[in-house]
Image (cartoon, rainbow, N blue to C red):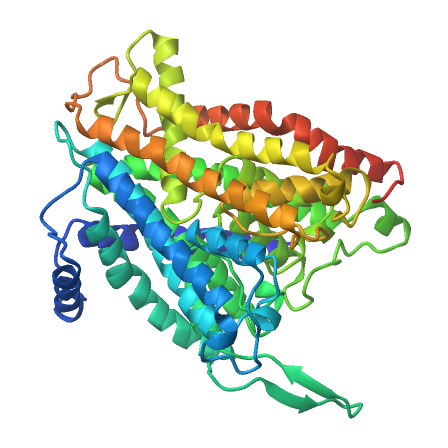
Length: 567
């Protein structure tokens, strides 16, 4: 661990905090339907979309109608991606003649991209055509990210409104998010990535002659446009198999830093949107502080573990830390920071192989996802996931002082607590349930590259990543099998949509309630006590749920490593 390393981490945090308030102000205006500097250009396009689609932007929806619209929207997205992949061989923009993608892999991939998971059981450059990458994947990256933000806005309206039955209009929210937030940033972002050396072309793959005289095919394509939204929308699906470790997806140290920033930017800004909409920006800063405490703790552990390496490496005199599976151009600190960011934010992009991290270094990304990826989290999903834990924390605080729990002027009653618990229990059901099946099913066990606790962690990480809608892979597990394609797809589906429904029920319930002014007995929710309470509730729930599984995987692997046993 070095001062330069810590400087990189601190610089990242400072820039994120600096961007949070101005971007939060802008997003609040966008979703409030107020005029922005882009309105003269984009407002006619927005109005035209409503006219063509028959949407009345002034008509809002009940929470159930809003939720049904979300689900139907994703059914359409699933059919588009699945159809494009199955018909790929007959469609244009296929310079190397990629064939149709298998049924189970197409099913897995389509489910992956509509749920903002972007789990990839394939190598992009060796499996997908340019059209599939653009129409199937890049297109859905925008829409799944916009959906997550729209859902967060619906829940925020539940807290900020009083005595109403509506939480917004899904079609309006997803249109405004795409037009005013995602597209403008991605246009500028794409140009920056091209400047850094990232390909953006519809031309054929390049034939090159190596120094030894051999012929090599270098895959290119419309990479920059997909990487921009992959990072900004916390999607994570790479154009290439190596993802952000590939020099064409992450050419320089500057592109690496900007990609890390873009993963966190919108999620952090939504905390400020929350504060503005409930009339007290300190509420948003308190939530961001909870996220920051958990994030810095995870970074510290991962950086320490990777900088110290393993006892075996130290016995060999290799004291420079654990560089296995990392890009030399990024090093240990940038790889560790990227790993924590991408798993805290439900992104799934990777610039190093988590399978090659030390046992404790690889455990932190696993824990980040298991906590529900509420440490900034996926765009929108992290915000409504964190608010579910806030509801539980406020409920606990209410029990302590013997009062009905209140948060930002809304009473938190049995309905909200039950819905919050129902949503939070979705993850352990999918993660632990499918992991238990996979480690005893012979066909699934055969896909494990490692024995012992490390092999168990590979399987645990796969279902954790799928159910948490993260998409990063621990590697070492052959996931492109019929069993894993179907079971991982089911984990993605349940992990996304079975959490959305209770969250939207909470939004509708809160919006219908009256707003209560604070009193002397109201628990303060902007100070250190509240931040500590929420952090404690998150860690206790996560620890009670997942500690036994972690003990069988990375914890026992770490203890075995200290005893000289490697896996």
